Length: 112
Image (cartoon, rainbow, N blue to C red):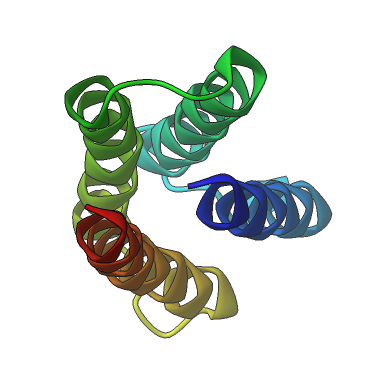
C-alpha cells in the first residue's frame, strides 16, 4: 500500500505542477478546465491523507483510494482538450490508479 500511495502522490503532484505551468488564458469558457484541476487536487489530498493515516483495513483503504480514483476518472471524462499533453497525462494517471489498485490487491492476497 505504501509504495502505491507514494507513487500516486508523486504522479498527482506532477500533474498539478503541469496544470500550473500551462497558459490559463486557454481555459474553456464554462470553467471545466478549472474544475478538472480541482478534481486532481482533491485526489491528491485523498492520497496524502491515506499516507498520513498509516496502515488501515483493506476496506477503508479501498474506499479512500476509489474516491481519489473517481475524481481522476471524472476529470478525464470532463476535460475537453483531448489533443493536449495534460489530457494524455490525466489518462496516464487514471491508468496508474487502476494498475496500482490491482497491484495492492495482489500483494494483500499473497500475504494472506
